[in-house]
Length: 293
Image 1 (tube, one colour):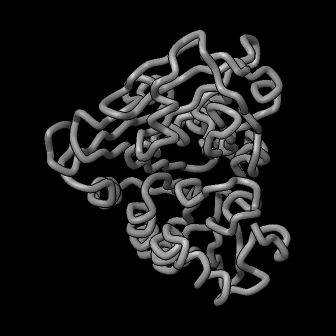
Image 2 (cartoon, one colour):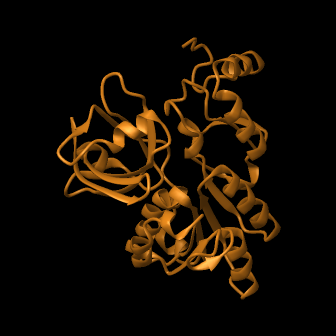
């Protein structure tokens, strides 16, 4: 059992948990994810690592209740635990492999939408720990849905909070704040955008116009997390990729967001999955092309 040592409700239906998982904590890097399961019959849930403490051997996850499996997770209390806590999975953020002195020369921007603040935080924290400041835009629909503001303030060079309804911070979408910052004279060498697919799509459309290279994380479309189910198939630069084994980070300007979002809708039903399998043939499943599960 992987014991929950801390549980906190960040806002309505969004929870943070610190989980004892020593081997994961020792080896994980910003950008990677874990797969959790509440019990032997439970659904596999891929979640991006929000934070980790190597000394304590804990990993922090943040999740939103959107179905039965996450509802069961939300019902777990401190002292209880998960049946499975597998990771670290996926590729670390590309920045982790860059020389620190080179990163210090770059002007970096992170754009987080909704629960996307959770995977953005460890990357910004890692940069901060290495003496690198990054600007961060955090957006949510309303003030009540905003998460990790205080934590982000402590590690961001400049934090810009925006709400769709104007109830807190700047008013409007994250893209409007990005436009405003550029209009004010800000220049960026790289943007990292993480959040709902529709948000990442429009951030990428804007940054392409502004000539800002952009990385996105496609964790939101993952289901199985091992490349076997085919749910997170996506076209990147004309090539078939799978978010869980090839990512979750990709060049946002190369991602076919419309195809990915359309495919996610079809994948939700048994009939839809059968149709996709017929259309995509051996490339329907991520790693093998032969899985009949």
